[in-house]
Image (cartoon, rainbow, N blue to C red; front, side, top):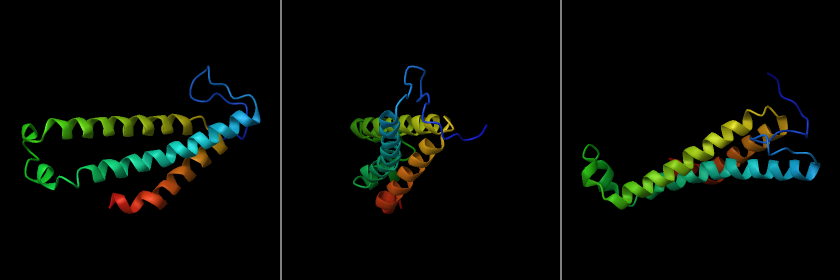
Amino acid sequence: MYFSNDTNIIFLFDYFRIRCMYEFIFCNIMCFLLGFLSIYIKAVKRNTFKKYPNDLKENLLFVKNIPVDHRLTFGMISFINYAVDYLLMLLVMTFNLFIFLSTMVGIAVGYFFCGHLLV
């Protein structure tokens, strides 16, 4: 496989065909935003449970002792995180150079603005 720079691509699914330059630019902006969103969601997930350090440290082996709303919140954030990451993987696998670069730049900008929240 090799990267192409064609602007007429199939974006994720067969019914998302990109035919004009405006649609292509819109898709690149969406890839950038999804890349940023991926890192932002990771930061939110990490910082959600910094408020409740006792839940994670003391009850790590006893899941029943962690409140249900904390587990549901963590589960929903994790689901959204993995769904966005999977979509980004599929977008990069279109092997379009501009889609790849806009996704990587979005992830880099996400780390630039939210990376300190992941430490």
